[in-house]
Image (tube, rainbow, N blue to C red; front, top):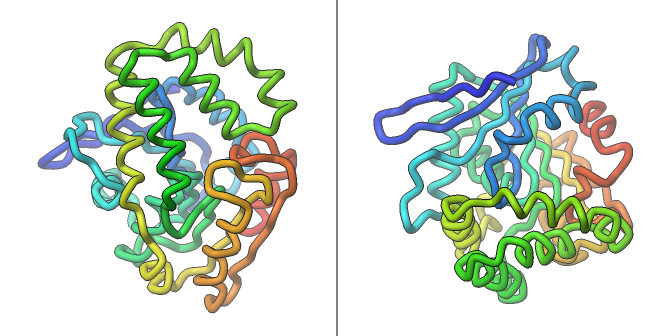
Length: 264
């Protein structure tokens, strides 16, 4: 997969694209320890069912991270990168932290958002959520990549998936660099002040909100809280899984089919 770079006056951002559909879909991934660009081939394979209808763009975070970086900043930078990449209107799919960004972009740049898919989203970060992020940040600062990966995996996956993935998580942690961990600390810290409750009311495009009743990151009611603020928009839908966990975008067997049906 070819990694491309879009440059603005103040930053650069990597992205990749695949598919040949006439419509455009932007994917904003969630928080990760290493850049999602390293998983480009796996992402293309996972979302292959969308390529007849869409040209898919997957954006990383900006390359030059400031020491203090908020979700608002991320959304602003990503919107600029989307425009600089020549995308004037697209369906936007955000997962977890990517959903936080997607909400801000759809509210502030309505001309960019044709439809919105929010997976494992929340309308605001609570104190309990902060404690989870604080644990991860402390592990990253201490250079404990393996413990970070295991803590991260245990939180986002159902128990059976976590148990099956344990050895792979440990293996992946072995390739993590100090630069990766410093980047993770900044990106994880961005979530602390996130509150989009009011901005959700400003979104006018149809949205599909997908959550899980056993989400161990944002809680069982997070998706419903987001949906309640969007349901006034015609075509908006809510779907709840039960037991797929926070990483339902990886674990729910019909997830890709469900978003495709909504988008088309």
